[in-house]
Amino acid sequence: MAFTGETEAERLEREQARISRHVDAKANTEPAEPKAVCPTEWIIALKGFPPPVTLLVGGEEIFNSPSEATEDVDTVCKVAPKNLTGNDDFTLKIPAMEFENTRKFKFNDGAYVKFEFTEQGLRIGQSNAPHAS
Image 1: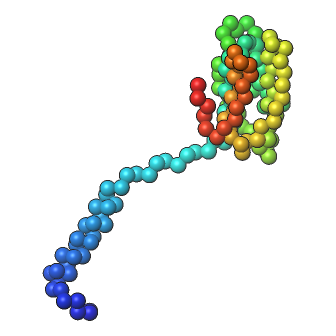
Image 2: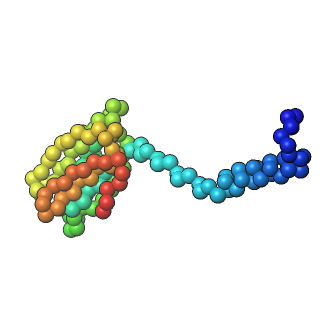
């Protein structure tokens, strides 16, 4: 053991202080935020469309509102990607507006897709985070 000029009692006191600082520092840390969980399915919001509305993803019917419904469609659908590459065709059909359109979405561009009919017209959005209501 090298001679440092301190007594055994001073060395023990210094070591205890060092250990206490280390323990206190660990005790005062806040827990880490949970990691974000990546969605594994499409999360599709349909809002403001007059019924009936039909949504197809990859050629499969995902949503079909009843034609006798009186309120505008406001729903969220969840569906697994249909194409292994993550590129799916979304077809929106709205007979009351004589509207039918197909658009391709890439899952890697965001799992959240929103179709909304407003006074300004059709709004379509895609993101990695849920859309605001």
